[in-house]
Amino acid sequence: MKVANPLKTFAKEKVINYYEKAGLDYEEWDKDFNMHFGYFKWGINPFNLSAMLNQMNEEVFLRLKLSNYSNPTVLDLGCGLAATSRYMAKKNEKALLYGITITPWQIEFGTQLNKKAELHNRISIIKSDFANTPFANDSADSAFAIESSCYAKGDDKKDLIKETYRVLKPGGRFVLTDGFRKHNNPLPKWLDKIYRKNLEGWALNDLGEINLFIKAMEDVGFKNIKVEDISWKVAPSFMHIPRTVFKFFWKRFLKKEKTTLSKERRDNALGPLWGMLLGLSRKHFSYYIISAEK
Ligand SMILES: C[S@@+](CC[C@H](N)C(=O)[O-])C[C@H]1O[C@@H](n2cnc3c(N)ncnc32)[C@H](O)[C@@H]1O
Image 1: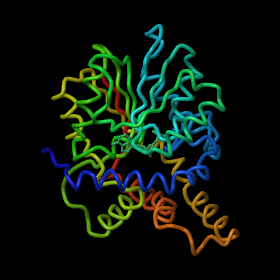
Image 2 (image 1 turned 180 degrees about the horizontal axis):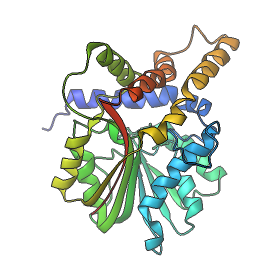
Image 3 (image 1 turned 90 degrees about the horizontal axis):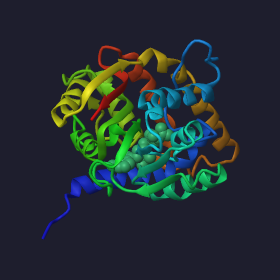
Image 4 (image 1 turned 45 degrees about the vertical axis):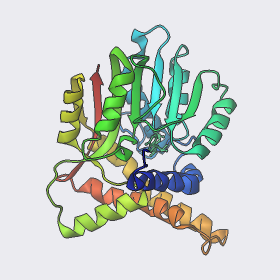
């Protein structure tokens, strides 16, 4: 009889529990529920967080090169409330998108948001582990993962990379954005403390280590791998964190929610503050956009 690995189960349950409890609070970050950082480029007002969040969607969209396909099938791995899928469905009216998440609440609420946007015929959200999906071999034209690969197992996140490679058609593109460690050496004590707080805040086990991650991509067979360090492009959206955190706690205070606020919601609200400090430790951490081809 196969017995589930209790550690693995716990890690997944921790993630689900966190997103079930704190998920709706992401509205404080973005009313469209983009659950990621933004991308700044010249011409965008850095005070306009929503514009930068959508620019991140656009940067991923451009790198997927969906215009190369007539009816592209696209996987949104770790889709949250599928804000990026809705963005892409509007940009490419022929695209069929599948959002994948392990969090049941996100399927329910994300599907409502898709219906409201009248995109539910082209975006389906399904419950699955992105490292073990129900899709057939060579079945998707492209796949992307925005700030979700960090939840995959290990330093190299190989399970996720392998599964993505399996389901992509030959020539299919994979684009992901995330924060990574730049090495595997011990961190200075004070920084390690902040790092642990950040991991706890977002129910993470460990960020990926960029060199091991790229090596895993190569080993699995991905080619034309392009790694872009976009830490400075993401930085202006980090600057919105203190205001968002303040607004969040102020609203809870006015609603007298202070005593009932769960640990997950408190950690979620404070997590980005720790993340912001990590973002400043450029020797140890960076934020990347990575594109590759099967
Ligand atoms: C920070 S959110 C990012 C959501 C979305 N990509 C966005 O940018 O708005 C991380 C997402 O990864 C999902 N996730 C975490 N572990 C997962 C797993 N093993 N399989 C599928 N989804 C997972 C969570 O449920 C959540 O939806």
